Structure formats: structure tokens, C-alpha cells
Amino acid sequence: MSYQTPLTPGDDPRGESRSPDAIGHASATDVTAHLLAGPLSMGAVGWVADYFLHTAFLLPLGALAGVALGLYVVWFRYGREG
Image (tube, rainbow, N blue to C red; front, side, top):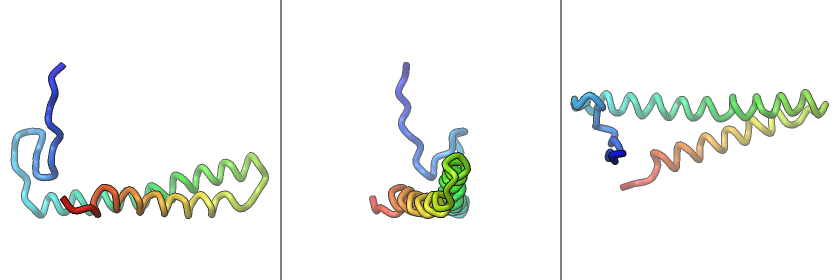
């Protein structure tokens, strides 16, 4: 098994370099996906839990937890310098 170095944002698996605009667009798309996926997925978990437990507070709680988780992932992945 050979070890490959991880790709940096400017690397392309085909060996071609990408423009800074393409890198910025990919990062913006990734951030948007994280910010949408968090509340949707955690809200869905809350909705299912509400359905089976016959409650009404887990959907908004799950959606809020998803927002917090999405923001944390974006901050952890893109907000740090270096």
C-alpha cells in the first residue's frame, strides 16, 4: 500500500492546476453544503424522534443543533489560519 500526500485546495487529481477563482468557488460551494446539510440532517433526526416519541420539541432542537454543528465544521475546516 503506497501513501499519497493529501491534496491541497489548488491541486487537481488529474495533475492540472486550478485557477484561484475555481478554488474559491469550490470552497463557497462546500461551505454552503455544510450550512444546509447540518440543519436538514439533524432536523430530520429530530423529526423522526418526535414521531416515535410523540413529542413536539425535538425537531427544532435538532435543527438548532444542526446549525451549530454546521457552523463548527465550517469554522474548523475553513476558519483557521495556516
